[in-house]
Amino acid sequence: MTETVLILGGTREAAQIAAEFVRDHPDWRVITSLAGRTKEPKPIVGEVRSGGFGGAEGLADYLRAEGVTRLVDATHPFARQISRNAKQAAQIAGVRLETRMRPPWKNQAGDHWIEVASLEEACDAIPPHARVLLALGSQHIALFASRKDVHFCVRMVDPPEIPLPLPDHELIIGLPGRTVDEEAALLTDHAISHIVCRNSGGDGAYSKIEAARRLAVPVIMIGR
Image (cartoon, rainbow, N blue to C red; front, side):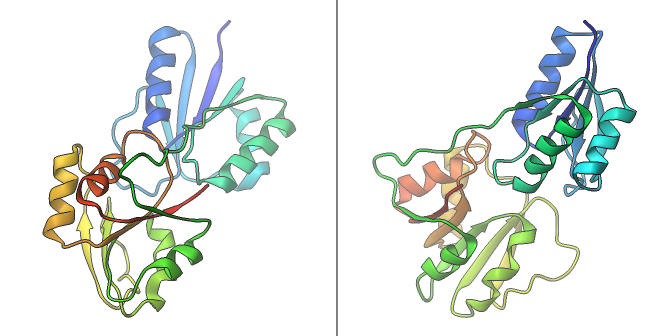
C-alpha cells in the first residue's frame, strides 16, 4: 500500500530512515521535517521541509493537509516538546505514530562521569577555574553565563547570530570530530579539563566520550 510518511528528523538516524524508506518503497512519499536550526544540513533523500508547525494543532493540520499516513518521531532524545506535540497531533489526526529513540550511552570502565539531571545541576557541578568543552545546543548556553570563574570552549555547527553571553569563552565552529584521535587532539589543544554534554546516545558524537576516557577527562553528563 502506498503511504505518505512524515519523519520528524534532524538526527543521523532520521536521515537513515528516510533513505531506507525511499530505497525499499519507491512508491511512497517520504517527507523529512527539520527544525531549521542548522543553516546547511546534510542532504537527505526524499522531500525535505524546514521550520516549525505551530504546536500540536499545527502539526495535526499538516498531517491532514498532506494526507500523511505514518508519522515517525526520530528527533533528538532531548527534543521533548516536539515529541509531545507529535503524540498529540497523531491522536488528533488519527495517524499512526512510530517513535525511533536511540538508546543512551552507557558508563563504561575508564569513564569518569559526573551524572546530573539538568542543565542547572551541570552548571553547579563544574569546579572553579575549569576549562570546559560545552557540547550543547546554542539554546542551552546562556545558563552558564553565571560561571565567570570558568573558561568555556563552545562547539557549534554554525556561528551564533548574536554574541554568546559567556564572559570567558572561545568558539569552535564545526561538527564533532569523526574519530577518537581528532577529539583527543581537540581536548589536548584547548587544555580541556571537563566536558559538559547531554546523554544523546548514538554514534555521531560518541568520539568525544571515547577521547575523554582515553585522556581521563571528567564528563558532566546530563541524563535524559
